[in-house]
Length: 527
Image 1 (cartoon, rainbow, N blue to C red):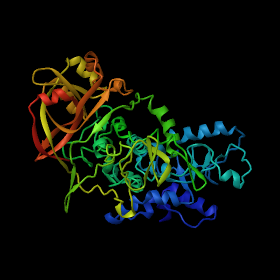
Image 2 (spheres, rainbow, N blue to C red):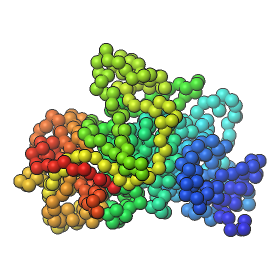
Image 3 (tube, rainbow, N blue to C red):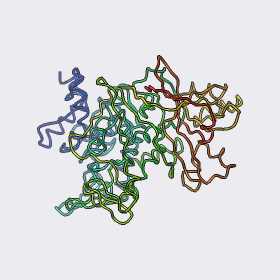
Image 4 (cartoon, rainbow, N blue to C red):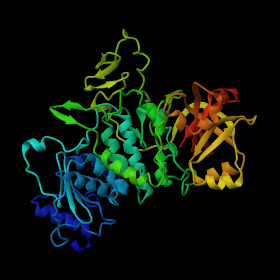
């Protein structure tokens, strides 16, 4: 029986015995596999398991569980070489960021939540905690209490979720997860559940298939950063078509840059402000350092998407999710106090105070906001990601526009680039653009004129002086207009099956162009 256990697990058990510990948690052995409800509950608690463990054993160089842990007695020799700590730390970040381990979807939560980790690389071991990175090749400095109360870099070990919904931080986590690989489509939601469960303590309403309910309008604005290598048939994906997680199912990279329109409540980057908490400093989460290393590798494959700074999103729909007990309103109220608190004499929500033109809350008095936002006020409000219903609904406007086909040769070239298609109205006047998600749909729109059904999900604008102006897909088409402000509607390109709509792409249509067309109100059921 023991001989059938994978080598990596055998070696990890031996390691625990050698250091004098008694217990080890192994996901594939400790999580109940034949009880769905228990399995989902345990998976959602992985953030707390990693966070409270003595340390996490990480096999960075292993492509499978049979390769074992290199660096334990009778497995492979140790190495000793006196090197400068700065160089060693750079080597460590690179080894982790470029490793097979860091490409797997399930391992993001290990990286984010583990307070201490022992990394087994191909030719050496490294230990990382909040106060040090230790290498086999480096002489250890004297260890004392003062050193261990400090920190070795500004991305200290141990993820601490903020007491307020940090959409910018979640943007980084979701982007990192979307670039990883999963063996099974059924793992897409569970492998991210540890992160959404932990962040539900600070995001009112929790998450719905990876979308924060408190900023639902903004979260719906994700887009693909290239055509899919394969496409699922309508209604057969393992996650809803409206969730950014469908990009993992379709094996494409997701572009969350439109989420920048939801960062407007932050007075500065969430990683810029450093606060004191119980005499200890709190920092940006550790995964940022590895993400920078990973980006250096990723960006050699494709150019990075720029953040659409200056984009403003304005909600116009009330969204509901269909559940067994009936339709439930999705809160979508992050910015509900934005306008009501502009006047210095206006009453503030409980716990909020003014600091000049900015605001702060008692849960984090060192953090400044441009206006008060919605917070989780008690533990009873915490909502854990269940992903129970694919269908969301809204009463919204619908209109029909046409795509603008391209010559055959250009269409062939466009298949390998960004999946952007220009739109025109019935009078052949340019009206906006779409980003579509699948190669099949992209080819159809590039080569044949089609009547596209579009539904409004929100509206917005951007000033031509904003940093994100030049990064708009429609920037070239707008240059000749010499606009000070571009106003638009955010729309989904949908196709229907058995009375339910499925997202095939997302885009923006010029506000005046949309309002000039024939429109009707529909009850949108989106899955």
